[in-house]
Length: 51
Image (tube, rainbow, N blue to C red; front, top):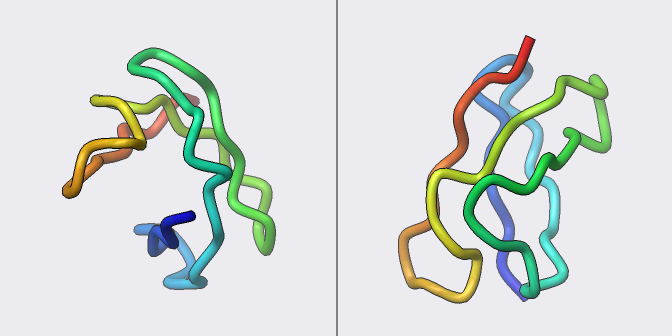
């Protein structure tokens, strides 16, 4: 499992590890939607804002 930091509110939120490129994930604190830019199984996954 990997934790990402929300670029909006700076909260850390966990990923389950099975997220894929293009999947939508939400910050567990501020509920901002993001799209995965690469698979969560990769070491350095990235998020893209999805408003």
